[in-house]
Length: 352
Image 1 (cartoon, rainbow, N blue to C red):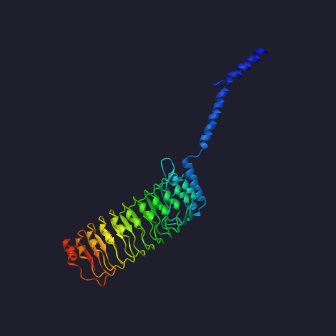
Image 2: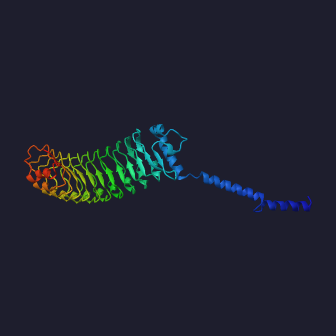
Image 3: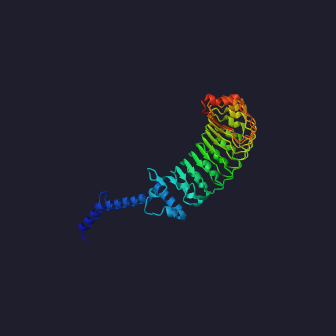
C-alpha cells in the first residue's frame, strides 16, 4: 500500500471517530438507547402498587373472581381507586368472602388513604399495615378477627377506625398513639376492658363500645376533650367513673342495658349533653345534679328500680322526652317535673 493511500485511510478513520463523526454519533445513539431502556425498565410507584394487588389476588381465590382481567388497569378493577399519579388511594371490598389474613404486602401501598374490607371472613391482620402512614380510614368491621396488631398504633394519619362486629378480646394500648383519630368503633366484640391509653385520643369525637362485656371503665376516658358521642350500652358495667363528668363537649351518652346501681353526680357537669340513656339498669335513684343539664332534650330512665325522681329535673327546660316506664314502685312525679309538659305546651312526652 502506498504512503498516500495509508494516510488517506488514517484521516478517514479519524474523521469517523471525531465527536461529530458517524461512528461517534452511532455510539452516542447506542448509549442513549441503552439509557432509555434502563429508564423504561425502572418500575414506577404505580407499577409497584399493581404488583402488590396482583400478588394479593394470586393468593386469594375470592379475589381471582373479582379481579379477573389481567389486561385491565387496576383503576378498572372493582373496588380500587387510583390517584393522579396512578397509585392506589382507596380499596373497598366489602362482602367478597375474603378469608385468612389481610396480607403484609398491602403495607407497601404508600399512597393508600382508605382501606375498607368489612363484611368478609378475615381472621388476621398483618403488622405491616402499620406502615400505611397516609391511611385515613380503616374499616375491618364484620369479620372474624380475634386480635389486631399493636403496629396499627403507628397509623399517624388515621381518622376513622372501625373494628365492630368481630371477636376481639382486647385492644392494644398503642391505639392511644392515634393522635388524628376521630371515630373509634369497637362494638359487638368480646371486650372486658379497654386500655387507659385511649384517654390520650384528644381528637376523638365518637367512641362506640356497646354490646361487649365491659365491667369497668378507665377514668382516663374523662380526658377525651373533643368527644361528642359515647356509646357504652349493653355491657356489664356496675359503675362509671366520675371523671366522665369532665366531657364538656359530649352530646350523647348511652349507658342503658348495664348493671348500674347509681351514677355519679359529676354527670351534671355535662353541659352540652342532649341525650342521656340510663334505661334498663338497677338504679334506685338518680342524682339531683342531673337537673343542671341545661341542654338535655331526652332522658330515658325506664326499666330501673326508681322509687322517686328529684324535683331538680324540673329545671330541664330543654327536655322534650322523659321515659320512666318499667319502674313499678315509682312515686308520683314532683310538681316541678310535671310542670315541664305544661311549660312546653305539651311537647314534653312522659312515658311512665
